[in-house]
Amino acid sequence: MVKKNACVFISGNGSNLRSLINHSRNQTFPINISLVVCNKINAKGIFYAKKYSIPYLIINTKKRNFENIVLQKLKRYKISLICLAGYMKIISKNFLKSFGKKIINVHPSLLPKFKGLNTFERVLKDKEKKTGCTIHYVNEKLDNGKNIIQKSFFISKEDNVKFLKKKTQSLEHKAFSEAIIKIYRYT
Image 1 (cartoon, rainbow, N blue to C red):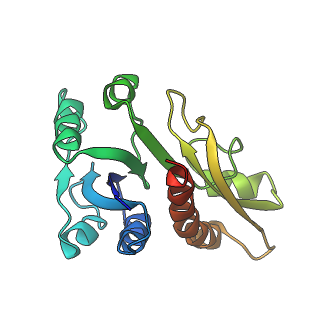
Image 2 (tube, helix red, strand yellow):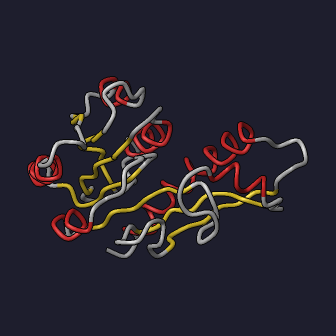
């Protein structure tokens, strides 16, 4: 099996990045994490890129040409898949078009419910019976691309935002790798 080169975009702690790195070390997993892109200089997730000697790029999204810099790096590393793993910036239409390959995202709800931010608070406020996560393709509309995989769990009376986040992230770690396997199963 020839593994595809993937890039993971992060903004925070990098728990999904860590999980993807662990899966990528398996010979049968279809991707190698070849690059990490981060938009926050103090993001804890950069630690995993350093720990596993994965090249990384910290970008300033306020600079006008930051997308061109990222696109050049993606080309240099022959990236064929981008995984948005807690990346808290919207990908522009121009970037989507210029990259022209697969971009997937993890979202902490059962899309199409609860697109956008503050998901766990909204789930609790609406007294949902269950929640979970979705891995989906990225398109020009926020959290609107075709779903690849969803995983869910029932919400208990004791659950608060902190517990929902922890339970959801645990599912995300499984769902992300399963979605990647599903994407490349027939290619």
